[in-house]
Each structure stands twice: as structure tokens, then as C-alpha cells.
Amino acid sequence: MLLLAAVEQNADAPDLVAQNIAFGLIAFMMVVSAIKVVTTKNVVHAALYLVLVLAGVAAQYVLLAAEFLASVQVLVYIGAIVVLFLFGIMLTRAPIKGEEEHTRNWIGGAVTAVGLAALLGYTLIDQYGSSKLPEEVGIGRAEVLSDSIFSTYLFPFEVVSILLTAALVGAIVIARKD
Figure 1: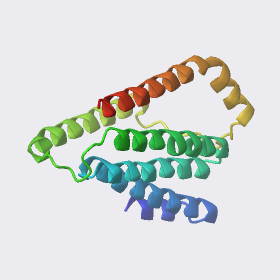
Figure 2: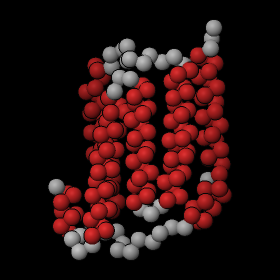
Figure 3: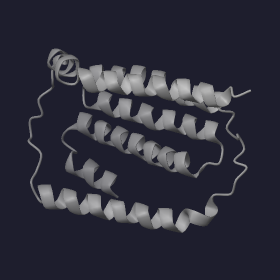
Figure 4: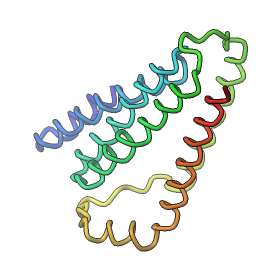
């Protein structure tokens, strides 16, 4: 319904219509995949659904004409983080078929999810209200983004890389007790 309203509103701009349709399709795929990440019993399938969610984020970046961010999303998150998750799953010999039954706590999880969604919605409405986005959206330059990543945020990126390496080494130590 929202997609049809966007199509009718932007009937004079055909490229925006295609962009809105692509956004809707990608967002739908991301939401379905995100739900499957937390509801599937197979941890390998959950990691693969996470790949779909992260690929959807990269596709949204492409729609926003932020190709640099899209390539970083693919290289860092899909190429490194998910591979790290899969290595961790394989090295710790996690149960593949979901041997334990986790359905007894789904009501608490659903209540928490609805509460967090309501809190997020309230926060966004309270902060932005009825203000509109600017008509002309400027396209950022990759130089400015790379300067901020590799100057201002260099230390947090290094800390995260050390943390992920420590987690992988810990998974190997736990898996290789014998």
C-alpha cells in the first residue's frame, strides 16, 4: 500500500518510481531474511540468512549512490564477519540441526521485540515529528568518508578487529580441548 502511494506520488519522475520499487523489494527481502535469522533452528542457515540481510544493506547503499559504502559492506561484513561466524560455528562443533528446543521463550522474545519497536518508533517520532527530508540530497564523496574512517574512527575499527581475532582464537581453544 505504501509502495503504491509512492508510485502515485512520483508518477512524473520515472527513475524515482523504479528506485522506490527496488527499495521496497530489497527491504521486504531483508525483513524476511532477518526474521529467518532468528527463527531458524540451523545455525548455518541463520548465518546464510544473515548474508542476505547484509547484502540487502549493500544494495540499499547502491540505491543511495554510495558505491564505496556498498563495496565496504560486501568486503567487510559479508566477506569477513560472516566467514568468521561460519568458522566459529564449524570450529566449536555447534549442533547443526538445533537439538535443543527454544520455543518456550518465544512469548518473552515477542514482547521484547514489540516493546523495542514501540520505543524506537516513539523516539523517531519525538525527534523528527513531521519534518521532511531536504529535496536535494547531496552525494557524499568517498575521500571525505575514507578520511573520517581512517582518522577519526581508526581506533574503534582496530579494537573491533582485535576483539574478533580474540573471539576466533577463543573458539579454537574451546573446540580443541582434546
